[in-house]
Image 1 (tube, rainbow, N blue to C red):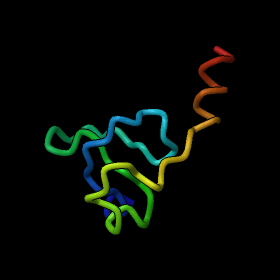
Image 2: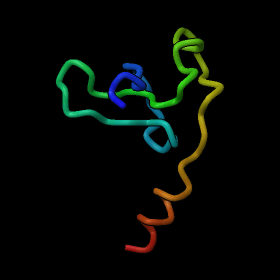
Image 3: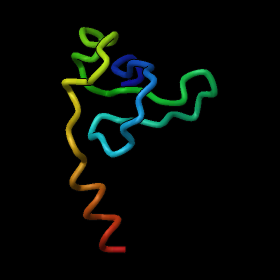
Length: 60
Protein backbone atom coordinates (compact mmCIF):
# COMPACT_ATOMS: atom_id res chain seq x y z
CA UNK A 1 0.00 0.00 0.00
CA UNK A 2 2.86 2.40 0.67
CA UNK A 3 3.75 2.37 -3.03
CA UNK A 4 0.26 3.75 -3.80
CA UNK A 5 0.99 6.94 -1.84
CA UNK A 6 2.28 10.01 -3.68
CA UNK A 7 4.10 12.65 -1.58
CA UNK A 8 2.38 16.03 -2.04
CA UNK A 9 2.13 19.51 -0.61
CA UNK A 10 -1.63 19.47 -0.08
CA UNK A 11 -3.61 21.93 2.06
CA UNK A 12 -6.86 19.90 1.88
CA UNK A 13 -6.89 17.90 5.11
CA UNK A 14 -10.60 17.16 4.57
CA UNK A 15 -9.95 15.31 1.29
CA UNK A 16 -10.81 11.63 1.04
CA UNK A 17 -7.34 10.86 -0.34
CA UNK A 18 -5.32 12.96 2.16
CA UNK A 19 -2.95 10.75 4.19
CA UNK A 20 -0.65 12.04 6.91
CA UNK A 21 2.33 9.72 7.31
CA UNK A 22 4.77 9.31 10.17
CA UNK A 23 7.87 9.57 7.98
CA UNK A 24 9.52 12.98 8.52
CA UNK A 25 10.45 13.43 4.85
CA UNK A 26 6.94 12.59 3.58
CA UNK A 27 4.55 14.23 5.99
CA UNK A 28 1.55 14.34 3.59
CA UNK A 29 0.64 11.93 0.80
CA UNK A 30 -2.21 11.43 -1.64
CA UNK A 31 -3.69 7.94 -1.92
CA UNK A 32 -5.54 8.51 -5.23
CA UNK A 33 -4.15 6.11 -7.89
CA UNK A 34 -4.12 8.85 -10.58
CA UNK A 35 -2.39 11.56 -8.53
CA UNK A 36 0.88 11.24 -10.46
CA UNK A 37 -0.93 12.49 -13.59
CA UNK A 38 -2.01 15.69 -11.80
CA UNK A 39 1.05 16.23 -9.61
CA UNK A 40 1.85 19.69 -10.99
CA UNK A 41 -1.73 21.00 -11.02
CA UNK A 42 -2.52 24.16 -9.07
CA UNK A 43 -6.06 23.05 -8.25
CA UNK A 44 -6.44 19.34 -7.62
CA UNK A 45 -9.18 17.81 -9.81
CA UNK A 46 -9.13 14.67 -7.63
CA UNK A 47 -10.36 16.39 -4.45
CA UNK A 48 -13.33 14.72 -2.78
CA UNK A 49 -14.71 15.80 0.57
CA UNK A 50 -14.36 13.08 3.22
CA UNK A 51 -17.93 12.93 4.54
CA UNK A 52 -17.33 9.87 6.74
CA UNK A 53 -14.49 11.59 8.61
CA UNK A 54 -16.70 14.66 9.18
CA UNK A 55 -19.67 12.61 10.37
CA UNK A 56 -17.49 10.60 12.74
CA UNK A 57 -16.06 13.80 14.23
CA UNK A 58 -19.56 15.23 14.73
CA UNK A 59 -20.78 12.09 16.53
CA UNK A 60 -18.04 12.31 19.15
